[in-house]
Amino acid sequence: MNALDATTFPGLQGLIVLDVSRFVEGAYCARLLADAGASVIKIEPPEGDPTRQLGPFLGGTSDQNNSGLFHYLNTNKRAITLNLQTDEGRQLFGSLLQKADILVSDYAPSDRWSTYAFYSNEFLGGLQIAEQNSTGVVTYDPKNDWIANNTDHVDSIGAGLNYAFVPQKWDGRLWLRYQRANGNAELTTPVTPSNLHPQSIAALDDTKLWTTSAEVQYHVKEHIDLAFGAWIEKYTLNDAESSNLPNYTPGSFFLAPNDLDYRGNVAYIRASYHW
Image (cartoon, rainbow, N blue to C red):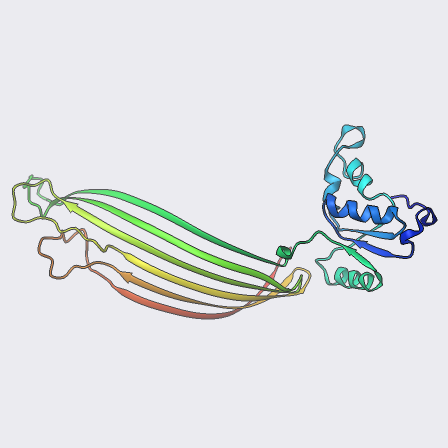
């Protein structure tokens, strides 16, 4: 990056510009300011600017030090390397920012917050054919011979929000999810005629699950994070309607219904180290 004599373009002489852009638009804007006489400082992350990976390359060989696009966009700029993920890097950036007149950045507001949502629908099916006669003699009894066509429909929906209260320092997350499983066991028997018929189970392991969680994370220092959070979960299980059935339900197919309501409230503190 060879700086031109600022007297050639005196219009913006004396202005200090920080360029933290990552892509072509911001880098080209900062280059125009440099061409007009401003003192532009290009700030690169330790891994290098993304445009270093884009050609054309000198000699036709990919090399981040020989990207024609990078050199074109950053002509007339001075450059430094700063790791803005560290406390030291952010402090140095803050010192430079206090002296700068213009900041060129292509970070959108969505780099500070983001939302997401999802929906899924799943269908599971299974077929069971049973012969429960231990004598080995075919009796054609609906109590022993039956077919179960089991199905489950599962719907899940959820949404979340991530927000950086203080970028690279304080982050917050909120997450909501609802899931419903609708199970059914359609029972038939090949035994005819008979006055005993398997009773289909309309509510087989029907469940509803609500989950809400929130977390605030503090970046203590490089590689070390501390998180404070809580989650609430409400779970309802409607296992089966098994009382007062007009027809016969095979005993070995369904042992005992277990309806259940559950609610959990959890608060936690988590320390983590990453590298």
